[in-house]
Image (cartoon, rainbow, N blue to C red; front, side):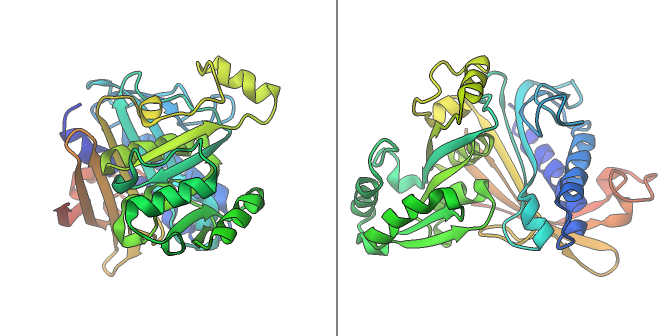
Length: 339
């Protein structure tokens, strides 16, 4: 994949974030998600790829756009797999909470796992723990291994987990070991990415969340040098059969990074909708402008770009009025830094 594709992709997440941000705090998650999805789909038309959505809003009969199997892009560029979550955290936006993102991952055709829409057990961590912990170990063993590798006491570890009733027994184990727990109300992708950012103070992400979100997190962590291990959790025979139909011959086996995102290059982009662990949210400025905060990364080079962009809203033809002006005139990049 060409490196220029990274900046094309981040323009798509910016548009989805701008479209969904007006719904923040309005209690309407469906319209927030619909606005993000519609804007993302339209913006994809300008991207130089022949993409196939492998992780999207659902099957064709469940989602009117960005469904699994839909083709996106200008059809002029490389053939790629596309994983999208136009609004990761629909409830977050509806309630006006933190950590909502618009997310895209792109990889060469055939690289991304066609993850079924079910729960996945996850263990995610930053670069210092790669090769040091395993999802197959009991949680107590994992915590002690992580503490030793990080040169910390177990009681000094901070573990992030989704705040869900299904995690009650796991939370009891975490409490018993004495680690600090940071509960996440929503935002499974953010949670899995957090241990790879030192500024978050998170050492491990544990528990279960959506399998599609696991693949998106794997794409990000491959760029960041971290890692995620997963294991699908089919709830019944129907979900088990769905795994088989999607090409996963052993639904209960441990899924590695290579299983989820392949061994080749991956590009990951995210734009904050609401403020979060490592990205700011959409901010409305004077003079009909809005500011977005994004991250775009590439696995091949391990380049991480933070992009802050000021957008002139009347020139956003995909989501606002006055569509006669050119899209490329609608944003002024005020800063971009590499890490």
